[in-house]
Image 1 (cartoon, rainbow, N blue to C red):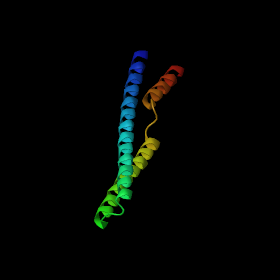
Image 2 (image 1 turned 180 degrees about the vertical axis):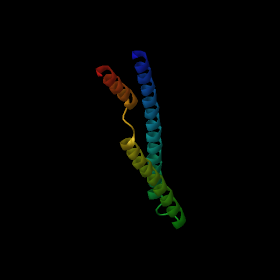
Image 3 (image 1 turned 90 degrees about the vertical axis):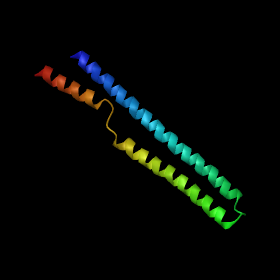
Image 4 (image 1 turned 180 degrees about the horizontal axis):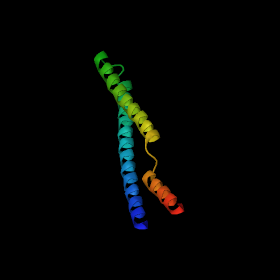
Amino acid sequence: MLESRLGLLGTDLEIEGLRLAKLLVWIAMSLFLVFLGVVLLAILVVTLAGEEHRVASLATLSGSCLGGALAIGLGLRAWMRNRPKPFQATIAELAKDRERMSS
């Protein structure tokens, strides 16, 4: 019985590792978009004296990147709040084992 529980714990650890990797990828994408938005915003400031169409296009690109970063950040926050608790299956199985042993 202990062997099966340890196997389940190993599986739970693997799942948590995959979730952590997914979280890190989303964070990296969000940071990339923020940095890109800041660079584009700096280009916008530099070219403010230029033609109207260049300014409008840089403003649109900057806003799109920053909006995408915001959307990813909000999605990440929602995902973190709604994700299942770590080791949920292991804890449930251990509770069942405790009930069986006390009966």
